[in-house]
Amino acid sequence: MVRIVVRIGGSVVASPVNIDLIIKYAELIRQIKLQGHEVAVILGGGILAREFIGIAKNLNLESAAQDRIAISVSRLYAQLFMEKLGDLACTKVVTTLDEAAEGFSQGKIVVMGGLKPGHTTDTVGALVAERLMADLLVKGTDQEGVYTRDPRKFSDAVKLDQMSFDDLTRVLECSEHKVGIHQVIDSMAIDILKRNHVQLIVFNGFKPENLLLAITGDKPVGTVIS
Ligand code: UTP
Image (cartoon, rainbow, N blue to C red; front, side, top):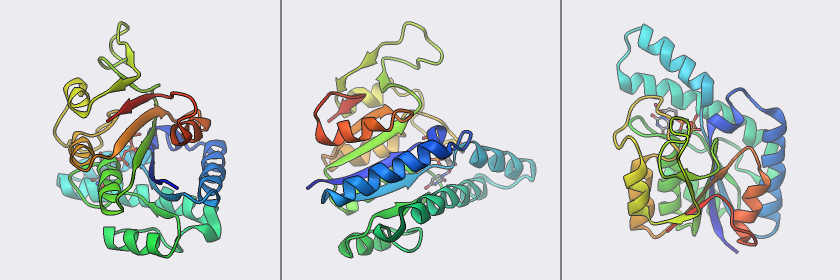
């Protein structure tokens, strides 16, 4: 049995909304749970969250308010996912770490979106992993894994199979919170995972079967960070 936090990027399932992928992830997560593992799933807000951030900006709302709007959007995706998981999941979207711990102790799949302003759902995943003493955080993202530099900008970027948390911090472009930021993983999350010795696997979320490979370790997938 492993305790696993699955962080599904909004850039994967919600930019635009990909019904087939949502169905596939829900099936896989049910399967993982029925195999006896403990699972928490954290959904991001994707393109709709960025649209609402834009609206909030145009209304001259402060950045914490922009974040809160984006959090609401991520919780909407979390709700869709939770409803699709059915009785294996908690009956409401979890909005605090205490509720996450309670959901786990009741043997349910915990489903969350954002938590509070000032970070992204990557940090939510890391905080949940810390609180639930998870073994592993996996993130399905829109790249094959972590690269030596941003592969969207640099054609000579090379994908790394394995790296340390310190190396990961070094290759990130931005270490501060910016509303609506899109990075392979956020730097606050890295610090939390590092100090709690939680392994991180970043993989291509458009290939959901990677999730099972990441958990079983049968075949190397994405980038493994420890
Ligand atoms: P998300 O974490 O929802 O992004 O953050 P995403 O759509 O999954 O993106 P990828 O796929 O990882 O790139 C979207 C925005 O929501 C706010 C922040 O503004 C963040 O940039 N947010 C989210 C918070 O303020 N707090 C949270 O706990 C979560």
